[in-house]
Length: 342
Ligand code: NAD
Ligand code: DAU
Image (cartoon, rainbow, N blue to C red; front, side):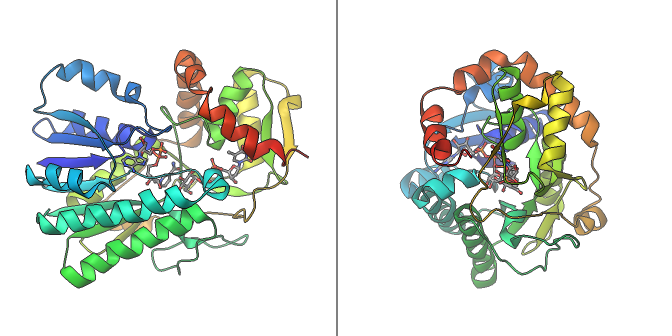
């Protein structure tokens, strides 16, 4: 199988490239990634070292998924499947400025779909998010039939993309599938999301900016469990279907914060309460029973094991994230927190 993985230099994409590379020795992987602030080729150093100059099993192409000419030229070489991870993925950035979210997440997806249709790609998997369902009250779970109700510019862009994917199935009979996962954590995550931000800040004895009352709830899943679920969907999922993927692990942000402080032996005084994120979804929780039942997917990690591995990874890879936390990163945070620190 020749497979185009987009956004493969990012957090989940790089973990998925590694899973495909190590599991399917006869696959040829093309990784198309624009290398935005969130893309990092160091995430795939181990694979590049293994393949050397050969492009038979793995090839990296730097480029934009919204570049129709480039995507067309890649698919012309014969591609059996596309897995689309490429996206602007951070909610706070979408609140700061949303145009790039439309360009990449919506237009980029449409470009991939058009090219896939033209070149008769047999399978198209869209990596989506539970945020398309909006926010839950204190009880209940998101199922695949929960109405779409996105609340942030990020989730609005992901929802729009999902609707295009659905439309290409309905209109053209394209073999499309959608996965909607909850919050991922683990190695190689860009240190702007809650867990890697708080681990790296705590390691540097910097403040942990906890939004609002700290009681918003997310359903946490270790990244390799998410990747294993995508593997199942890619190979065995039914075209036209949506599959929810969750960690069955609801935690408040406060609980996450204390877990990190305890793991690193750092004081509570590092916690800094800041103004809440505008439009902040209160609670996410996923019903994963469909993928468990139909595709026999199971999780390998519980929260304690996943967090242990994650914290150890950031402790060991300080060189990598210290380099990242400069430049454009600092400018964004100065703008973002500037008027929000209470
Ligand atoms: P990430 O921000 O770590 O990585 C995104 C990658 O996409 C980067 O390598 C970036 O360079 C690349 N990219 C961005 N714009 C591009 C473009 N126009 N063309 C080509 N490449 C481009 O994101 P992530 O956390 O790994 O998320 C991957 C996907 O999974 C996203 O679609 C996201 O919506 C979805 N998702 C993420 C989570 C999560 O908790 N992180 C949960 C559910 C779903
Ligand atoms: O649910 C899946 C989604 O999870 C993905 O689609 C997104 O790509 C991913 O970014 C993530 O979105 P969240 O907004 O839930 O993740 P984030 O890590 O930004 O925030 C998690 C929670 O922590 C949220 O309630 C906001 C809070 N938070 C976050 C940051 C960055 C803080 O309290 N302080 C912070 O500095």
